[in-house]
Image 1 (cartoon, helix red, strand yellow):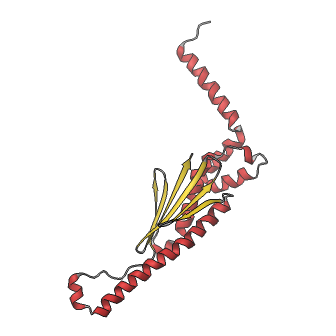
Image 2 (tube, helix red, strand yellow):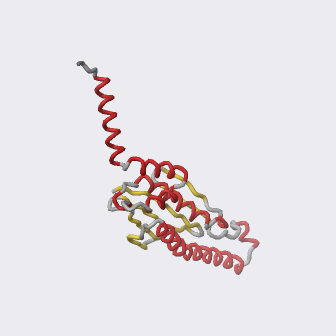
Image 3 (tube, one colour):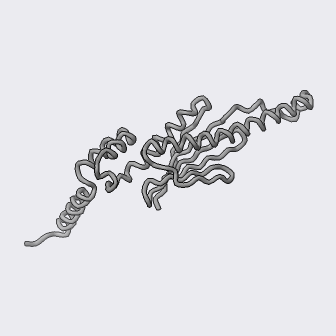
Length: 194
């Protein structure tokens, strides 16, 4: 019996697809994937309910979970006009923590007294301090959000900002970086595969 190259490729492709379905846990994983398309958080909770959860490969859920967490953090800052943006490596949240006082120009300086100029500079310093204080609060909120899905904080670094690393598995991690510039607070979520 002769087999064309096209038929051979089709047979190989079908056998590979069948073996991949077996590796993925077939119907259970496929149902979790369907649920994850609608609600990644709920899909993760369902996956946790199975006794073989520890051996399941649910890495397809992690980017969706990080998106949900980023969205939850952005919603907690709605009164500060948060902007949630998606990029190729994750999600960024940026917001003006507290509005700055009206900017003054050289011409305004002629109309302002030295006390008024100093008052405006003092307000800017106070607003910058508020965003730095908020950075620690948001780091705690983010750690709480990750703990909801059973992912604990692996490490926390504080240099010019705060960097949090969360460990999903040995080779799947998430990094969250918080930084401030004047009265702006930026939070960057990245999904890392090692």
